[in-house]
Length: 196
Image (cartoon, rainbow, N blue to C red; front, side, top):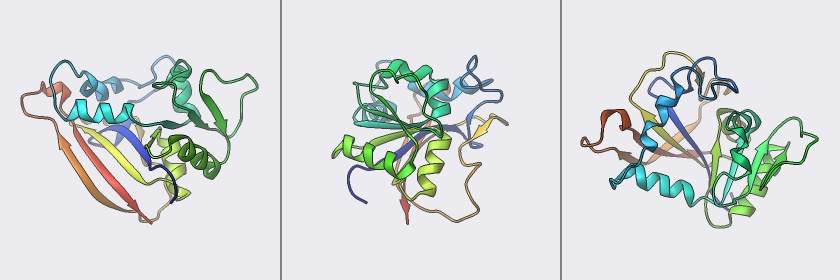
């Protein structure tokens, strides 16, 4: 590996869902899926949620899949601070992308461009499809999973489309929300390193 760390950053339910059922343009997180993001209500209290959020904003490039990008309404062309946004897609749209968005069709090329853009900072990856594509290509270095204590029961799972191969992970960090935080905002932040 050369360049920046590429880190999948996903919030998920305890039963592995990253969106509730029937997610589409009108309901980008599906039925009940926005419950997964209550932890981002940072208010004024210090703690791990705020620390993790600050680390998100310190990333210097973003990789996402086309579906995630479209359901997020293109982030208005700016995910945060004008960092380059690389969208993995099979089909490049005819219209020019907004802001700092770039469409890329090859996984390895996408990873190389994002690493170069990020320099010595990290690259944030959003979306199950992009995360799985990078993992299959050997380009995913870490997983940052924000596990919310809720069972959605159905929806879109993070790892449904992976091949039947073992992927060894090393737990490198665990942060938990203090008991004093409102139960609706409880979350466990788990960071894993991918071993190849």
